[in-house]
Image (cartoon, rainbow, N blue to C red):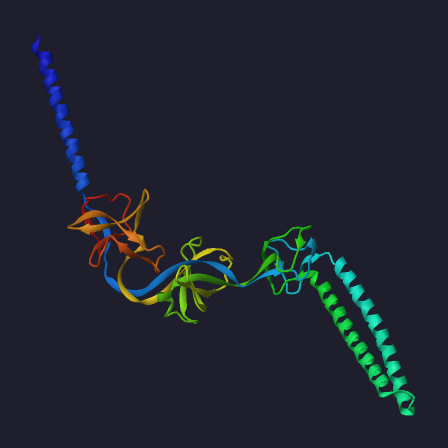
Length: 357
């Protein structure tokens, strides 16, 4: 009677172990099932090699405006970011001192003209007296000298009036071209002085990328050369720029030359944006991988390669920007490697592969 329960317990344990063994076999069978995939064999190809340098976008034209006269700022009609038209007044200075100078110059001109009229009349009088023998040659020469001096004083006074008038116009600082105010360095009440920067204006109708090339690299760069431009803040896009100017002077501190590149107008681009320029420098052999083969998991970038019928995950380093529908492989793959295209989410390291044609 006591052995019967023991036999029942042992039988139950045996059945349970048998059931577990069956489950493991079923899991192994499922894991061993090959995953249907499509693959592509990588091949090396020649691509244009280049030198990549970084820089910033600027307006094609830029001007820092300053006043020609000294005086307090009474009005600022434009703020940073406002568009301006050529000739439109941006900054207004107090011109009362200039008006006073104009009044003084005009008064001096009136006095000079009066003196000139008197000198001309005296000259005519002495010429008449000389003809009658009532005046000496010395007196006539002195009258001519006085007349010439008075006429010269008139011209000098007229120049002073003209100069004072030009200073009145200088009390208003206009835009030199159509563009945009990008910076303002003064406020109302500040004292403007000749040479002190007031505002900075850029022509935003076209943009230029300024980059610095090493003197050895800049040797073969000429105006008119095509350059590939990329902007990290606008991923997936490229622009074709044209070298507009290569500054011949070399920076003695960095041993580089400034290169200015015209960039096509685009709403996505604006002055001050960081950009990169790639200058062509021959060709090189490289391997590219289709974009649909790339797997990004947890900050890792890689592809599944097919090796001996198994899936092997490989970490790769890719170029930042795609070249069409593929990426250039910097490391991790080589010509002849077979990679899985559009790998399913269920694919894992070591899985058996069934390659579909």
